[in-house]
Structures are given as C-alpha cells and as structure tokens.
Amino acid sequence: MTDPRQIADAYIDIWNTADPAGRQAKIAALWTEDAQFADPVAQAAGRAEIAALIGTVRDTYPDMTFAVTGTPDGFGEMVRFGWSMAAPGTAPVVRGTDIATCRDGRIATVTGFFDLVPQGAVPA
Image 1 (cartoon, one colour):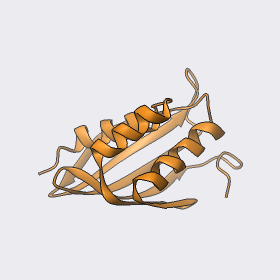
Image 2: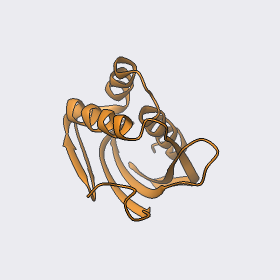
Image 3: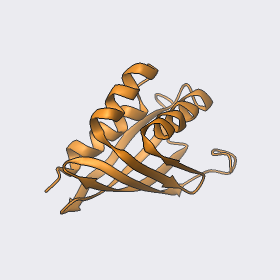
Image 4: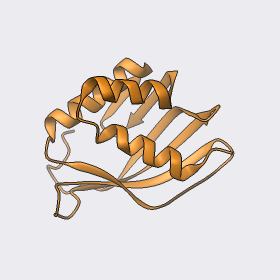
C-alpha cells in the first residue's frame, strides 16, 4: 500500500518549491514519466507539462503557499488528501481535495477538486 501522508506531503512540497530545477527533480522522483494531472481549470500530461503548470501557478500567486489539510487517507494505490493555498498568516483563498493514483509508489494521476474558491481567486 502507498503511504497517503508521505505522498500528500511530497506532492505539496513540489507546489511549494520555488526553484524550477529543484521542482523538476522532485517531480521526476515522485511522478511517473507518463503522469497525468487534471482539475477544473487545468490539465497536464507528462512531467514537463506538470512542471510548467506548477510553475505558472507559482508565477501567478508568488506569495502563496500550499499545505496539506486534514488527514490523508487511501487504499491500495489510491490516495485522497485535502489542501489549501494561502499567503502566510492569512486564511486560505482556495481549498481543495485531490485524488492521486499511484503506481509502484509514484504518482501516475492526480484529479483535483476545488472545495472553496472565493470569486476571482482562481482564473477560469
């Protein structure tokens, strides 16, 4: 079984990594080569597109950080966890739930859902 806490923490750490080369190295270690990402506003296929997507989010919201919320859980190769995005010391502007499917301990797919999105917080 995949460790839900370990996967969630490593995933969120990637979103908080400012250095593109460091972020790319973490993506290579955690995601499968053919990984897929989808949420209501973005889709990415493969590590390069996932890295570009995360870089765009970081460039758009440079003062924001992500955090795991609640207790990640899962079964088999599935992991579910909550997350939030906020500027340090402020309330989250976005909260969501992501479902990751893993293969051999690495993320193969992530499907994300927004739980709280104040109007105008995330571009459509």
